[in-house]
Image (cartoon, rainbow, N blue to C red; front, side, top):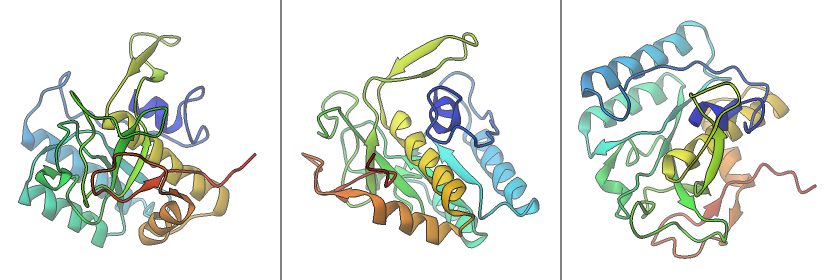
Length: 212
């Protein structure tokens, strides 16, 4: 789902981007050590190849608040690597989740087709840690079950890759840019004050700037 949303040929936001999948979970479970090893490998791969101004990491997973995640995200940011992550689906403050709570990430909440924050069971986390919202409800994208198969899912894990794809789209359109610059560009292009029930989140809706 997530890679297809970031840059898949049919459903991708940035259809010409290159995608590198890093497996850290077995289905929906896995060890923290495997997750951090995969994250470290990804950051080091980006830095070793000098791709800080063109690469972005999408992290569509999370845990309870973690100082280990805090340190990993800060280290990646200091190396020039941008991380986009899901806010979480507990319908609770994102400040209690990692890596969502890290200030260096772009933390993405989930809206419905009406621009309302998805709430209730599986509802989008909220609060000051949420930087922006994107479509994350009933999202159709590619499935791992076959070359022509699709899945329809809901959650902030579907919203986050929309913004990661937007980062790649903007860099492809406007040229390579630093993590800080493209992060600011995403926020500058976003539509303000259209999300209902943001619950203290930053009220921005991701937008690519194309009004046609």
